[in-house]
Length: 70
Image 1 (tube, helix red, strand yellow):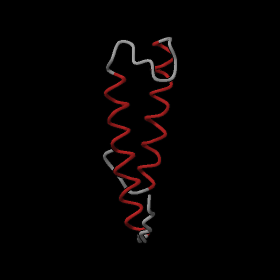
Image 2: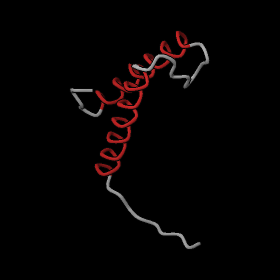
Image 3: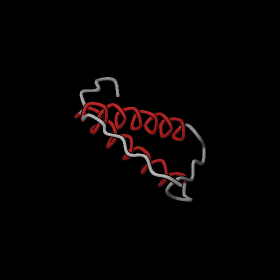
Image 4: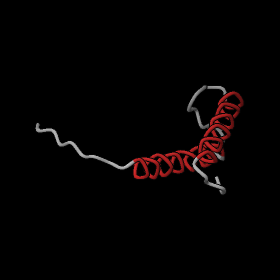
């Protein structure tokens, strides 16, 4: 398998990071609506607590990038 190297401007990397974070944030919000998401814990109460922490963390990172509606 051959390798390809590409060069990205810092702004392009920012866009990639922000879009990926938004996608994961949306997935976590969808998972939070489930009765038993089972992402981090088997216990749904502990699991939802951890998901909420992850959502808050992602929102903080997105706010650093200037995203207001995270």
